[in-house]
Length: 484
Image (cartoon, rainbow, N blue to C red; front, top):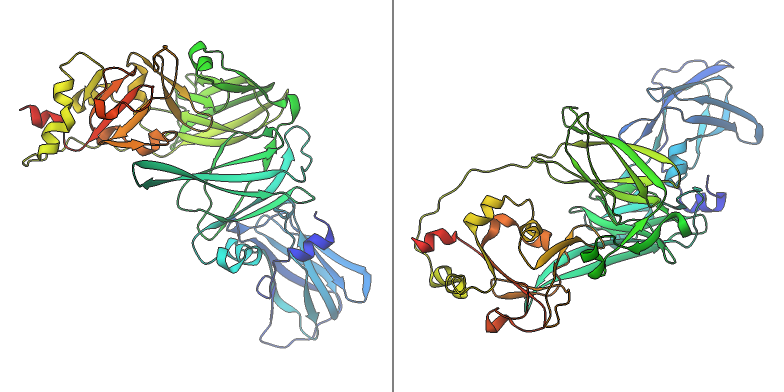
């Protein structure tokens, strides 16, 4: 539990957190009567089992009555005599949240209460109590938890938790502006971060000096609370080395390794094991495929909170956070339940515009022998899951994992000296200044045509600023219509 002084600052129970309802009919309250009640977890939306409920007589701290809530959250305290009491409860959930619910006064007079209701406050109540009014005026949420040492579990005072997301800005080109909100853990390693965007998954990481967790994907409920501890690997629990793949190493890619192990099983939404699902622990070189029974095993993993990504045909990629420990094996069950809808072909009839029929010379350049060109028909034949998949088989390019989630495209002969670099990308003639989340910006189904130049030569004159390769993306109607 947190120190009493901290609990006082985090008192979340109000008059609504503990309710005592008197019976309508008066009855004599004999000594030794039984007080009945229940404990409810408003965050999880279910009864709270295993809560230790205590009643202490005011003015007589030695008179303590207690009971433990059952599976349905109910409890009974026998031997209660008339008088003034305070009543409250303890539970590991409160410890893990870093919160305390203040005890409430309860008067036992001539008739006992019909029911005493105790509760962990709701997410909205916690958010409103911990966050300033300007942080509760919108639909943002609250992230709370502890920063801990990955191997020992001890709190890490002064550690920083950062949430990150990107916003697309169209102004003199396409920019992906990075937003960050940091917060420091207090003297017991506890943190509360208000104003976290709740309109979709965002990234988060825990840091202490040069040590850090993996980059995790989290979703905070609108106007609610997400509880997530950040287990940070210290020192040799996660070492950074150059990637073993020569092309990735030449592109400056580093990975993290350690002695942690992870096993598990991947199932579909009906509980059926999935064979052949692809797995990756982001930030490491650990990859694998599930066996016929859906099981898998990965080793040489960095300790701490890491992101495991699972891919399977017909399902959206799923990322789950796993908390790994050095020289130990952790297990996880991953359920894929978000299916990818495949729509039938749609034919649109109309008169193409001059821009549509020209695409700044795409058709003419595709006959010139420089670069690599793909029409929508060719893209559909490749059936890419995401944009970067198109470049896994285009000469002169490689696809490597990014430092966070996702991949980036690298030109293997991007400069005049044959060096590796990240090519410049244009969408309908507009330059993308930050392509680190290109898979989130460009969907394969939106591409009408694509032209790629691995080196500085051959690209159209208006797209030759800089010394690396070029990728030109054209969106809009299918180019096949222009060739008829």
